Image 1 (tube, rainbow, N blue to C red):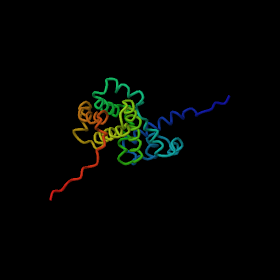
Image 2: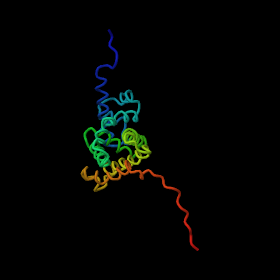
Image 3: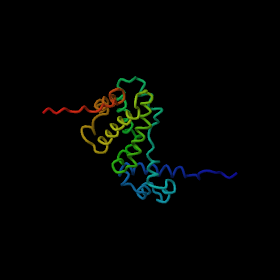
Length: 208
């Protein structure tokens, strides 16, 4: 009986291309990356990359395989309770980004500067898949707004630590960064006043 499916070696070639793409995007960012550069790193014909992924954006999306499953990662963050949740969240993201499994995420972070596509991918993942899920579990009011506020802090932290490399943030230990940033995230996640709309400003009375 004739065998169907991928020919032997196709999966290995695809994986080799993805590994080369991750390294290439990490080194030069999205705009600096090229199909030819990825092909050279993978030692394949550029046409093969287009065959598998159709475009540079296509291989970028495939290469940036997010390193954790939110459904698995979130419960341990909540297990100790609400106290210290902001700091635990900062530690989790920093430790993930700085682990070997987080290298695709660093490629994405470095590409945010020059690619709106990359920025959209990062914002969408952090806000929708992680933080909005967390806010829903906590049954907070305005979960999307809270998730967006926390996401803005985490993405900004990643940019300053890994791309712009502002000191002392860039080289500070993870625990210290968590102590600095955690209380702000804690407020966004648990403080009722954090999402409270202010009323209309009072009219100022000018004395004559």
